[in-house]
Image (cartoon, rainbow, N blue to C red; front, top):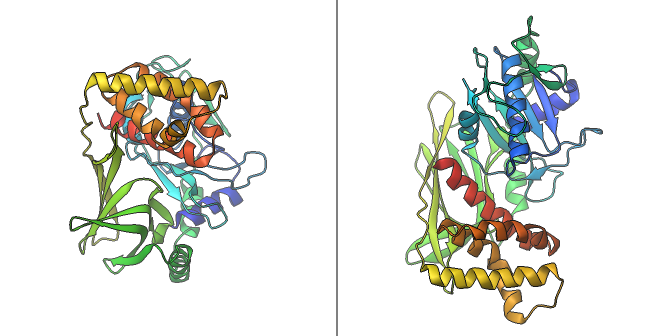
Length: 379
């Protein structure tokens, strides 16, 4: 099994950006430009590496190669974006890789593009790239081409060597289990589980019991063998269950206009561990937006719009307005999910304002975007 942290270190140490490897400070899939650039690199790497994996490492300073990290990116439906825009799309995964020197919640993103024997092109236009655009790597750059430029560099042996050097060891596994347990304080439940005598899953969370059911917040789940974070959140409520073969995560989101807010199931993620030393991760969207009286929602939207106006003008806030700030993003999201188009615009207005108020407030905006992204790519 490949230790993905060692793999990233090997890519950074032994290779500058090339025809099978690219690095980014960050990616932005919330804009057309960001999506277009990401799809360009996916297409170019796939076309240049029909016989081996290729990689994009995210959270790296380009000039210095410093590992600075990015936010945990929970998007199990990234493949849907690739499938929607690319003709003959490659299989693509995005994994959140733990590095001990990074702040809590920060990881390094690893995009793996699996071998695809056929050339891939854009099947519909996005940003400045027209339908039918073809891309290929030329050294460290992804360039538009008229057709496949031959001969291709044979990267199979080089990539195989790098992946072989990143194989796991018992010491690395045990060290990380001890690190994980030690990082989570006594107020959190922390456990490790072993599946098929091979896979080690560590998880931690703040426990809460409601009507004979147990929920967790501040949840952190990691597949230790590969140094991959499977789930991370400070805000959501999660149910956790397992059998001898499976680990099951059910995520809930808290929504509503007036207290008390309710928790609604968002997504179920199932990790199935197989006898042959592999595993699969499947997800199912469970979310059904609560249908709320439109008159009440329009009233809430007007109240939130007035609050955003005051924030933009840097006017002093009333106590009840300060109390409304942590719920602003979720309530604007709720309005949007109920078909009120103006709510999305107000949510974008709120983004820089919440960011200026500090990480706790900005996290509520990022959580709302994560939920909206899940819903979009699942439907």
